[in-house]
Image (tube, rainbow, N blue to C red; front, side, top):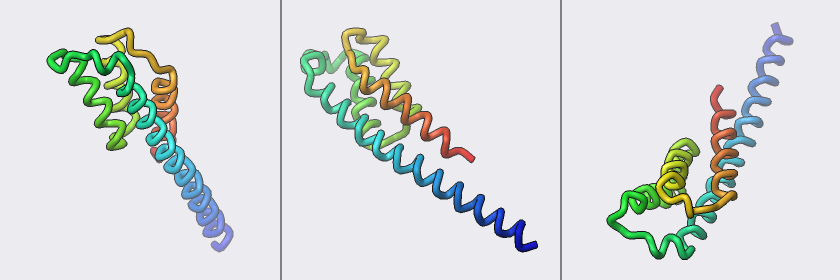
Length: 110
């Protein structure tokens, strides 16, 4: 009856609010991750990177992924690969932002 319909409507409204929160948070985190990756691009390490080196391709994938907001898992894969190839690359912020982005993306899966 009506009480069941009210309960369903309330649940749907709650889910929409929750989804909206996670979506907004993903967008903010994506912008912040892009800013941090751009900072990394301005660093001494990036300017000395050889364009023929495999790390350069991984690095470009990270930059493109962050600016295009491709998603947390793709960014995580690029970040982990880059850190393995070039341990001198450091940014606690990028790792933290990507981890949080992945969490909020997963929270949107219903």
